[in-house]
Image (cartoon, rainbow, N blue to C red; front, side, top):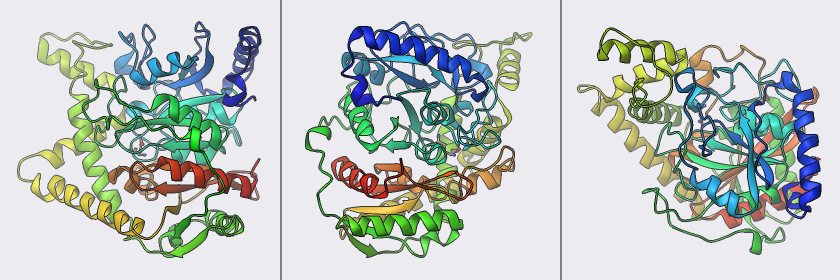
Length: 446
Ligand code: GLN
């Protein structure tokens, strides 16, 4: 598959030829179920779009039954920025319903396969994006990351996935899951393409009140020769599988070989991250999902009166995982429990942020696992608690609002990709990409 960098230099003719071939290839690999829909009308470089990002006049459903029939009335800001840069949306890709999940098994459209092993999940929630790029069915894709949904599927599918600093990329036109955590980001074949796509979609946007209104670009200064101080976390990685530990050791060697300095640090037990995350995320999700009432958007199931219409629409429209989180979110926000759960979670969030800040006083980057294992088999994370616990290495980054990039390090003995992530301090995407480029070259995964 050609890279994004190469595709940006293709003539119009070659690009059109490429798109026709791509469409055929997607058709031939239908059983992967990465794409929900292919729409090749635009004339720019084709990019796959997660089904929670609005493209004007396209269906957009967040992988949910409740949004069937809903047509986006406007472009998300990231789509506008893509169009200006000569890129065009090329099909919607599969995801967990409302981005809640780690496997893409909760989609209304059925599950997506991992391109490296058809009996395994591609990760989630941006599993369609990762599978499409990993299978050579997309040059690049957009995903969204609330608690790891870009980085974890990227790691499972052997591609690069990057979550920007909170506020770097406009959320205007992104279906909200947990608004204080959500960020759109690039999912690509390599680090340089991720930097290119990140530069295109990031930047100020007055339409998003949480946007950081900053427009620095990374590609003009991309430099893999900078010598950096990188923190490693010997205790923190103890809960990871042997495959992940092997990759971690390989990455440390690679970083040393590239001339970076390794510094040992510690982080608090990730069990607090998981509690703080699932309280915060479900509380915000409950509020965000209140708008799906059968009146304003998409699917409606008529009842005898307005209340019954709400009830029936939501009962039939939402899947089990979404309902579970609405219940959980309402519980943690209810009077009597609000202080004990929600307020406590916000305090924990501060502690996590401070903990990262302290580490970054001394280092430029942190090397961390992305997931505790390689891609699990379908059904392996069917118990919701197991699924939540598997997010232990990604969610603190969102709680602290930091940028992080997941990249493939090696394959295990079964040929399954193992990815790791680098984490940088807020707004230091430059160092993140510089370090990732250096690590990518040294590990030579491809
Ligand atoms: N797996 C996490 C969750 O289910 C993260 C999902 C995401 O980043 N959208 O909430």
